[in-house]
Every structure is written in C-alpha cells, then in structure tokens.
Image (cartoon, rainbow, N blue to C red; front, top):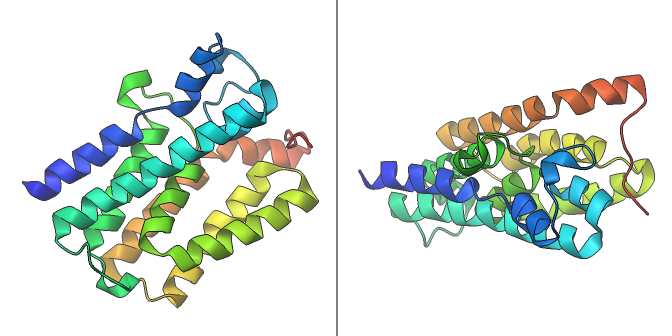
Length: 202
C-alpha cells in the first residue's frame, strides 16, 4: 500500500506543469504560443530566460521529489550507492515523468519529460546527472538545438547508469523512462530529419 501511494503521489507531483503555471502568470497559454509544448525550451523561446529557468527548476524538482517518494516507500533513504537504492526510487521517478508527459491536471497534454527525468537521475545517480549536464551544455553550444542535445544525453544516461552500478529492475525503470522521453520527442526527430528543428535562442 505504501508503494502504491508513493507511485500515485509521484505521478500527481509530476502532473504539476510549471510551464503552464509560469505562462499563465505572464498572461499567456503556453499551449497557444511558440511550439505549443509546455516545456522549458518553448518558454525560453517565447517568454525569456528567467521564466524558462523557473520552469526548469520546477520540472527538475518534480523528478527529485518523485524519486525520493519511492525511496522513502522502499525504506532505503540512507542508501549511498545506486546499487543500494530501492527499485522503487526509479519506479516512482518514472511515474513522475509519466505525470509530466501526461498530466492529470492539464487534460493529459504535457511536455517531453527531459527536465523531470534529469531530476530523477539527480536523486538516484548524481554522477550520471553531472556528466549528462556537462555533455548537454557542450552539445547545445555547438548544435544550438535543444532536442538533439537532450536526446543524445538521455540515451547516453543508460550506459552511464550501468557504469555506476544500476542493474536489474532499477535499470528496467530507467530504460522505460528513456523510451518514454524519446517517444515524446518523435515530432522533434521528424523535424530534425527534415532540417527544420527550432534552435535555442542565443
């Protein structure tokens, strides 16, 4: 029962869409401007750096909180290595990403899940999060396309996690998270192949 509550709670937390909230504070509907995607990149392109930073922090914290709920339910909040963490930290993190992508509060129309997934990795495998952040910054600087950088880093997270000792069911939940995020980027992948994907403002 405790595990079930943690998973549902993580999904509900993930469903809080900070892009929608911040955009409404600026008097706009994020679904009606820019690409229409309720995520950091669209907020950056349409509302600017500060609102985008607020969305990024909020969405990242959803992943951290979701994964921590699973860890608490699994009874392993004092774990010091990924192999010691309960699989439920990764499972609840996945639930938070599902909530972000398909939020119950916003007619199941959510974002792509990158920032929330990053929050999950921060909590579960911080070393991977650090490497991923550095790689993303370098890629974004040279490609100027956030989606390319995000997809490369998301896929790279799997071998990095294995390197850090994530195995078994924990790895399965992490792989499912990556698959979901890549699936949510399918339109971006199509635009990349056509060479028309939007660039990050400089």
